[in-house]
Every structure is written in C-alpha cells, then in structure tokens.
Length: 227
Ligand SMILES: C[S@@+](CC[C@H](N)C(=O)[O-])C[C@H]1O[C@@H](n2cnc3c(N)ncnc32)[C@H](O)[C@@H]1O
Image (cartoon, rainbow, N blue to C red; front, top):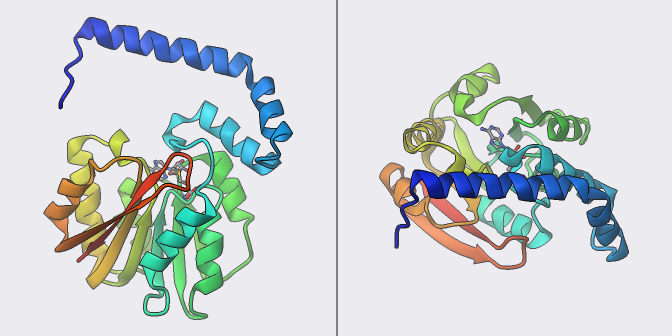
C-alpha cells in the first residue's frame, strides 16, 4: 500500500525528525553508557554510531554482523571470482573478510564517501590487493577506469549503500554503470533493509536471487543479481 503525505504531513515529519535528532545528540553520553554496560560493543562500534548521528548517508547504526558478512561472502564465491568492487565499504568490516579469502592475485576497489569511515578503511591493512577510494559510487565508471578496470572486467560488485536515498533516475544510472562494469555472468550483490530494489534489479540483470539475514541490526535482505 502506498502512503501519500501532504506537504503539511511532510513538515510535521521533518520537524519530528529534527526533534528526535537534537534529543539524540544531547543524550549521546547516555547511549555510550548503554553500549559499554551491555558490553554489546567496543569503542569502535560506538564511533560508528557517532558517525551515523552526524551523517545519515551512513544509513546504519552498526557495522554489518558476522552473519550478514558471511552471507555476502558466500554469495561472492571468491574461489571463482577475484576482481571485486565494493560500494560503501565504511570502516571495512566486509573488506577485511574479503581480503582473507581473496586470491593472491585478486583486487578489490573499496569506495567510501564518509571521511571518518574512509580514514579507518585506509588504515585497515597495507595490502597491495586493496585499493581504498574516497568518493561517490555514482562515479564508479570513472573510479574503475582510474584503477585500470575496464567495462566487462569485474567479477563481483557488492553494495551496502542505501539505494533508497538515490532518486529513481539515480538508481537506474548506477545500476547501468554497475552492469556495464561486470563481465557476462558476473554478479552484483546488494544488502538492503527493504525489497524495493528487486524490480529495479530485474530491469538491469538476467536473474535475481533473494536471501534474508535476521541476525543483523536491522535485519537485511541480500540480493544477488546475475548479468
Ligand atoms: C549501511 S553502511 C554499510 C557499511 C559496511 N559496508 C558494512 O557492511 O557495515 C553504507 C555505507 O555506504 C556509504 N555510502 C552511502 N552513500 C554512498 C555513496 N554515494 N558513495 C559511496 N559511499 C556511500 C556510507 O557512508 C556507509 O559507510
């Protein structure tokens, strides 16, 4: 069911959002205590949360859980795929695990927009297979060329970016660029909170598999789209 909001409703929602955000910022130290008391997270996790408060484009309060990471890794099939591009790598929770399994002659270009998260990504590891890049995935065609990756030359692209934040045209443009970079039979794997991407993926790819991982905050769908 589609919900239509009037301009008045939108203003109310916007003001409510601003109010919650201002209260959140004021109470950040309390949230920190909860994180620490529960031992549910270390300082790194809390830093991630703080980055989220400042930049909603990060779109997640915690990094992906090990269950979600494992699910994405399995879908990547790194035994047979070694040229990888990553959209929205953040501080590298997936990147680190990919490097553990990537072939010695493999490569991964990991793109991240947020400055603070990118700094952590860059410090991840001195590994010649990893190319961390600070920028916008909407320019992935140019970024890939910068690293000598040609159209049709990439095996797998994974993505944690919030597609919901892109315009309708922006989503199609990014998926056009994504499909063009992949080799025939290559795959695009997107982990997302909602299913809104499925029909759009079907416009650009031959076949789309859907999985669901509940052991993540929040639970995520994992879509694997084949070129
Ligand atoms: C939901 S987080 C996923 C982070 C990480 N890969 C993980 O699994 O925990 C999405 C990430 O995408 C980044 N991002 C959002 N839009 C982006 C864009 N247009 N270009 C590059 N990165 C973007 C955010 O800054 C954030 O780090």
